[in-house]
Image 1 (cartoon, rainbow, N blue to C red):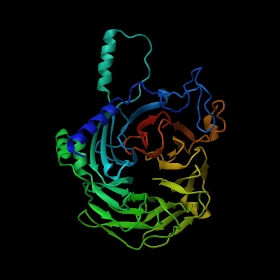
Image 2 (tube, rainbow, N blue to C red):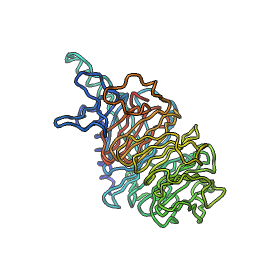
Image 3 (cartoon, rainbow, N blue to C red):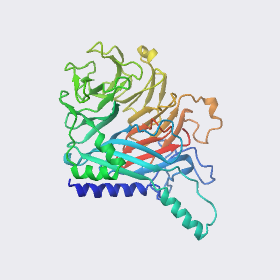
Length: 450
């Protein structure tokens, strides 16, 4: 695409982001704890069907922050880039950096995107009473100052992007990309990061823009895949898995631009490998899940077979897993719509320590909170994002909302409003903030529950 076209496209997206906090919420379908109004009802997906004439309305009091945006073609995978603004940020406005890949209608229309969202303010309560014209004017100016902003640096990428994962290696910000081409590629995001922080750099980036050139690529999988993860303990170490059951481990070489990949795959699975997760504490250990309904734990020092496995961990394809950062727990979600928590100290028993069936369709993404080891979130093909807290017990809940007594007490929140939700991530530096991507675009939000 010509440079001027890219510039116009980016401006349109920024304008759309700026309008994301408008009052046009008729299409949003959100669920919190209920607002206590006499006419309001609590809606729970999959339990109470909507009656004729009933409509869902967003309860803004259930959110500390809520924004939405679109990027043209849907981004069905993304990851959060850590920035230099510090950890534990709990004040508004919020800023963040994301890397995403599109799944456009044609291979040539795809983009690898770095986006910077900033000036993201919290959700304010509705003001009561009439306002004077002067107050209205001041309010309009204040609203203009609080408009959310977004900058996009987009590189053309031939082929739809199945999954994106990012990491920091020294001064490098790297993106590992699984694409429908059947290749795993690594991209250096430096130029894109500079562009989203500087108007001059953005102008130069747009003028020089050409198809994304990978720092390194690997075609040894022979077919496409979705599973990929960077090691949190060894900078630059990568693992990737494909739809023909094979897993390869990448070892970074000196210089930061090449990897050594053992051509002998890890191959205990019998069907497609759907997700991979490195252990957050053991540098040589990773986990995998598969269409063969098993979860396996591997040690790269003893290929090619797994050292532990839970066969029949779900009753259908296992789509996603997440390894708790501070506890020996693994979370899994499958086509059966079930969420399971596994204690790795009891993994050989093949029995989870917790089992939740709230979603009514396949689970598409799961992730433990980076700051609270008992909290996790999940998304499903039922267009719902759920938030959970394992530390909550039945006696902690008190009086349940009428009609919702059968809900598990660990369920904190159900968020709706997107169609075909594909992936969710907690922001690692802004506690409680969650980003979700779907066919209909991105949501950035923080609920009152976390």
